Length: 425
Image (cartoon, rainbow, N blue to C red; front, top):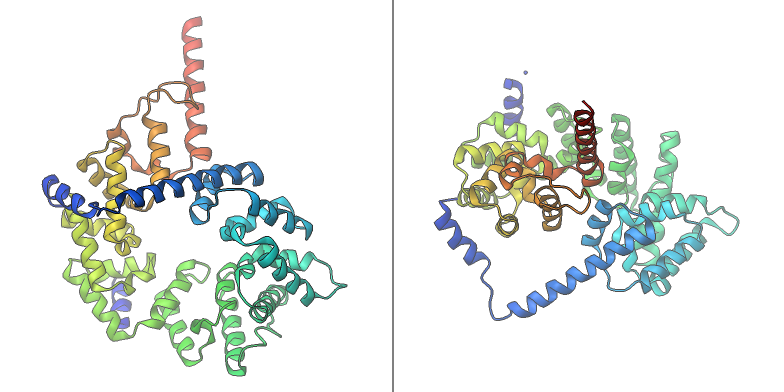
């Protein structure tokens, strides 16, 4: 299939509402355990709200970041998080560094400060030596906070060495003691492969996840060379995340398997050019199973989209191909709860497919801000209709703090100035 994709690149140089309502009822029908599920969901929501407020008040995170972090790790009281913050500050971490660490690794706040986090920091500190400055420890943990989530002193020691040496090698472009605890063959392979990726321009932020693991992608020998050559020939940019994704996808798929994937998409109406363009945007799209692809296709048909529209959605946002039935119906339920109808939902998916991946809270917050008659932030009528939001769903994907509110404030100021000028004349 590799040759087919390359050839494609080179050649370029739901049923109606009645059926849908039945499907939704089936999907969201619960057994007698619904009450316990609902209670659990309410408790989870309370913890998320508490965590959100804590992150904003104690760490100064923006509401957008705090919302994202609270969904990945939440707690119901501030006892342990406060202990974690005190411990990190005692090691010299600044509030801005702690904020960055928590943003990148939210579960850090769930670790037991005394029994878990403290001993790990002591292990790392002992590796630096008593006379060593804590600056390097702080820099390393700040860049790769997941080190503190690893188990076992030997594991922590090994990966800390990898990260530390990798960071130092970034200045000299040399890998001297990288992953010394790995078997000799794997060690040599990783040093060589990492050097090749760096010389190609792969940024450190994309190398770190590979270097702190025994990932076969960089620990292999002949397979790495073959995979790298294919991905380079395909034209992927080494500085992009798609480059690393493509390495992983191509490595796991042989020519025959890739051909089979293309055939699956072909049965649904995609051309080779379409498959190639989706692969460029989201290389993982070729790793989805036939059942996964066809099921998502059928689900979107039940949401009111016709085949041509689904093909367009897939091409615009191939990430949605991997969405489960439950995820899509959860999105549908959220939009219905906000007052949108099935036609408006279909319109939003067609025009802005990423809306399928937005959290319920994000959608509710933005929709209520735009549509609600009396807005607490603006103290004026926004006069947006649900149909207006459906016609321009991209507005749901922009930042409230950086885009929506500032621009609404500008519009308000212009209106006031226009009225004053009109009154004086």
